[in-house]
Image (cartoon, rainbow, N blue to C red; front, top):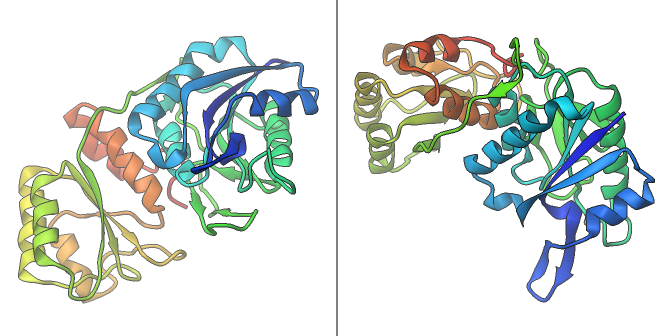
Length: 308
């Protein structure tokens, strides 16, 4: 069985420098030797980055590498920084179609180069998952195999930093052949509702961006100000997709439950149900890359198990 390990950077492969931890050379190679992983080919995606610097262009690079080498390997492991791992995992779920192999993302909270690192165990588990998991995009972390489109980083420093809610579908887009829909440049924002929030900020975002994720209160409420109403109406007129997700970590949105959320129903805001902000954000990027006549249909679908 042959595996391809795509190394993008992140804490797992970092070394100590005068400026702090930064991506280093030879770290992943040494770990593979320690694991005696002779069936693994390493593909570094240069330049290696801290995941805080990741962009949709990096999602494209990862997806392209998987598609290019899909028939040559039995599974794929992606080493990635933890800060934006949930975004990249969801992005790959939406972008890749027709996967016939497992794609397993992993990383670590402590570099492989320090004592008591979780990196070697996470990498070992990810390699095992890439040999045995069903096709789809998964995240292996702290002994758990997690759904790529349901993932959240729930702790900034604990070794078991990630959680994932139950999914109704596997993290997989069906297709007759493997391929991917590239992410094109777009202006997408995440707006989190807060009491007394700047009306200028809301108005500007809703009238100028290509798509918006609204992080609303509870089960789906927001302050019904004149500026917000005008902004949402303008977005509806422009055909700007707006998805509402909850600020609460569990439960999700159910638009129409409360009168204070009716404005969203009246202005065509999409009910994000229990989608994570990361999944909603990357789904908007994906949908904007589709032909205009397919976007409404795609937004309404539970495409890759992003909703429970």
